[in-house]
Length: 522
Image: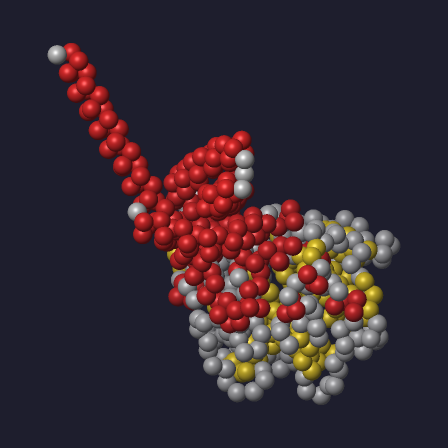
């Protein structure tokens, strides 16, 4: 018991502080819509979280409006500027309050001059009469609009799960039509193990009831940690207290340690499940399961009738064949809308980070620029060639490892249809060939806040501790997870031993009492 107490107590005291961070940040992450209006000043964050030179995916792309006017968009929302990026004006009027609501994936100007924006929270149309963005309702719960594109007199709207079409107009009611996406030719009906573990860890696997259950696990963990600290440091508190306060502290201690044990034992399965699934969502344990596929759990949100549910990331249209090329979480596919009954996968594809594609732009020679946090490439689908964009040499396939490559591309700036700059996640604005354009990031944009949800994500994944740990932060989640498993297992063994001792004492006490009654009867 002494050894068990030692292995239960000291690791608990050391990592309890971090477990509290996991629990609180996890609850915030589980309810993004509750907290998306809350901003956090970047001055309160470590230096590496502050904007400088257009870094941290502050800008994903730009859209020219006229000869000397253009829009830029990304994590900072939507801003209007001139051709030299010297003057900036807020263009977010109409979007909901909170920097998270301004997270913009795509902005598109139609042939008729109408403006549309796809954000983390849905589709918007700019109303010239009102002078602000107006929300367009889509027949999908919480749509994330990732790409907008023109097809004749309609606008194609790609979300993470569906493809819709709306009429291209400046005002009025937008009638939304769904476009059927044929299933992939290699669709096996399975889902990624990573996604399965992700939605299990968050509770999303079973919708809102599942999330609330995981929230309760988080609240239980908070109580377990705090009650453990209280039990450990109670003797020191009691020494400095009067008799009356001592009695109250002891009663509170009996209550807290009783519930400490009850929550730990009766919530054992959920504590273990949350800990183990969380460990596999971050490298290095993520690497071996990243590309593993499993059957969806029956009755869960993974068992979906839509084969593309939460898999769509970007699209372009081939100008020659008229095919749509889809970028998905499972690779690139192509099909002709209204004609093909299946979507075919490309045999040779560029690598894309698990965190998703960030650049998908056609070139005049029927090739495509493909960028993600894994790198940037030129892709010739017809010739089955993938070249490294920087070196021009054949790309070397990278399988597994960190989702971040040596060049983590978060976006790209175009000038007159030609690439002018790469937006590297850490380095920011990197000018490309034939241009010297490298504008300073203005103070008004550098002051843009970070969302509370994003702060919670950085804390929950341990990335925020890279300020102190450097690259070793990657071991933070698995090490905390393993230590927590040790704490849980030793706690259960101690509880079983104590319960067995009590049971033996009760049996022995009963036998003594029975013998005493027999003697008295004699």
